[in-house]
Image (tube, rainbow, N blue to C red):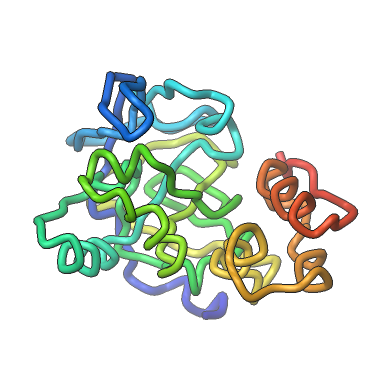
Length: 227
C-alpha cells in the first residue's frame, strides 16, 4: 500500500466507549473497561482518547500513545466463525471498528485523517486474559497473537470528532514496510531476529512497545514518543 491509496474509501464502522466495571476472569474478578458500547453521532477525540471512555489500568492501557484502540471489521468475521458466535463492533474492546487498513498494511507512524481528527499509528495491541474472559475462550489471546489480528493503537495528533461512517484517509507514511504485523512480531511473535528488531525502534513507535522489543532482544536505542 502506498500513499496513492489515500483516496481509498475506508470508513469507521462504529465507535465504542467503556468505563471500568467488574468482570470475572481466570485471575478472579477485576475492574476493566474492555466491555464497550457503541455510541451514535459525532464523538470528540483528543490526546487522552475518545470522550466518554475511561481505563481501569492506566499502567497497561490508555495514555497519549494508546489513546484510541482500533480493530478491523473483517477480523470479526474470522473470529465469529472460530468462536461460533455473533460478534459486533466493540467485541474486542476497541474504540474504533474500521473498514480500513489491517495489521499487514497499517505502518508505524502512518497518519490518518479519521473524521476530523488526525491520528497516528503508534503500536500493536497486545491482547490479554480479559479479552479471553469476555469472549468466553481462554485460548483466545494466544490465538490472536498467533493469527496476527491484534488490532493497533492511534495517538492523537490533532483533536477532532469521529463517528460511524466517518472517512479514514491516509495522509502521510514515514516508514513504508514497518507494518503493525512486523512490530508485533518484533515484540512477541516469531520468527524475528535482533538486527531486524533494532530497525523497528523508530521515534514514532510507542516507548512501551520499544521497551518490549528492547527487553526481548537487548536491542539498544529504544524510541521516544513522537509527540
